[in-house]
Image (cartoon, rainbow, N blue to C red):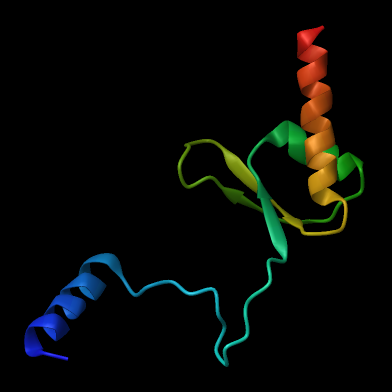
Amino acid sequence: MSIVSTKLAQIAIFKYGYPKSNKKKGGDIMEKTCKVITNPSVARELLRRKFTIVDIKPNKFLANASVFVFKLEPGLMAAVRKYKEERKNKKAN
């Protein structure tokens, strides 16, 4: 590697940070264990259906808003899709 390319790589790391990887130390691929829900009504419905909430955090992009972190359990995404479909059908009628 030449001095110029090394210097450019150092500048890129300084400006943009190290490249993100989906691998843990040791080379194992990380599995998703949580799902972030931004819609409070969807989060409420998931809680009503007994899905496990892990955390509630402030939304980084919207002031006075929160995100809801749910444990990724079987049926979670199906419940979200079903709720959104029911809501869409209810608005259409």
